[in-house]
Image (cartoon, rainbow, N blue to C red; front, side, top):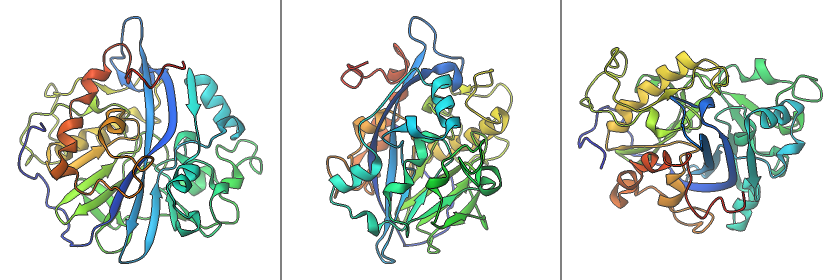
Length: 347
């Protein structure tokens, strides 16, 4: 079980909620663990085996539907040259069965009904293939994205995303007017049901989502703020501790930190660790469920849209999903991260 039984934060009050569903993007990867954590995994298998989730979020009163993250396109080898280099340099093996667009359609979703795709950040395993979606679907990005990545390739020979992913559609870079749990926040629907949070360190413009699943419970959509739950679990201080400054030198209780080495996947490891440290009080709150994009245990714990398109995770607390997933990272430390039999037999 999570270690505390009382909330640590007073969130902005609202009775508005969003229906939140989890999608298996079908992307599987094997990468070296020293790109993501330190100390890295040791022994004969020092890799991290990562599956990938994203979220379908619906504000029913407003009739709005958005995706938070989009997995990989089915053919990442046809991404921008920079993406192809990222895969060659950092991915030992990958497999994508289908794009998220196909996952949605298989569940009976009409892609024309999707209002927005929110990219937690620009990396290939999160932005999918926008050309598969209607031009009326906007792309929502974090701060600094436009200056850093527009125009895309090939208009910009050094572009890191494809120009086709953003061409002829609205690209909206958000600004922040609130603060929640030490993070700058943006009230996406304007009713307190869904916030986007500024969570820097991994990549330019990295943002996370905070979905209100009941008036008092939330799902934190972590993107790649970190890649392994052991970087913020366990944490044994009282949940009422302030978000900033609680992590004094020598008082870290979690097993790992984000990688600072030459292969680090974090553009600014120091800032990334500061962001991760803020997660610990949130994770200690029984009303907040942190879901990282690559936390494999979630795919074995949560109801997935792929199998049950009508089932949401809004009752995650009543269903005990956080308790079931909380220590999953410990099992992933054995024989390489995410080495759950049955998912890697083809490799």
